[in-house]
Length: 251
Ligand code: G
Ligand code: G
Ligand code: MN
Ligand code: NA
Image (cartoon, rainbow, N blue to C red):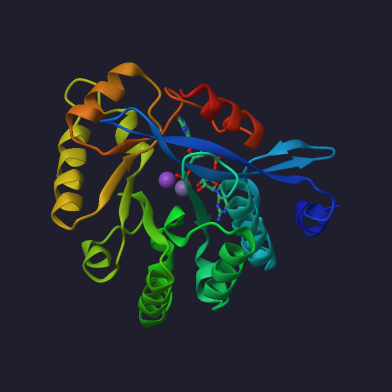
């Protein structure tokens, strides 16, 4: 069987789960939110990364079902966490364009009891490649519902500053490719990160730097004024139980 065939049954077979990676506020050093990341435990192949199966799901028209499940599951889990933690859920471009997202969001919030401002949707620049007027309408509808919008993987792909002009993002996520080499001598990345931070601040948006692995990267990122960090230096993605245990430890 092809992976695509297996993916059709993966949800009903309980092979898909969510893990949660903490986002830490630089000034208070506290976990203020998490990003939900999908995992597929394939019965024969073992764990398969979403960077492999999400594109397959896109092709096969399965991403809507997987995405709806992730939204509902993340809201359900987050509603039970202490401290009004925010949960960020990745949304694929096709989920965005099929028109059902606002309904799913409203329904996931109502069912779970999570407040809208605790839910953040992470959107990649791919959404702008389709119908831009439809995308603008979708942004407006989602903001009316009260959820937060984050522009994911910023600085890669088809980055255009025009997107920032027209779309009501609350946050820019600085792609980990900028972080990775920022501490190397002669790297231009810290200048680029500083410019992204200045841009975000001027537009009233938060910033999160992704993929922070080492303490020297963390120190640099803090110095550059990034508001939140995410990465292995703090924590890998955790199961819901492990996350709750960590929150109760107060760390
Ligand atoms: O956790 P990780 O490295 O393995 O994720 C790889 C990629 O898969 C990242 O680009 C991430 O944004 C994406 N991804 C993870 N979970 C989801 C999800 O629930 N929906 C979508 N659309 N993408 C996801
Ligand atoms: O595209 P998106 O930003 O949603 O993807 C997040 C991805 O980054 C996930 O695959 C997650 O596992 C990965 N990730 C999170 N922290 C780190 C890190 O410190 N180093 C590296 N290399 N990857 C990370
Ligand atoms: Mn993301
Ligand atoms: Na990202």
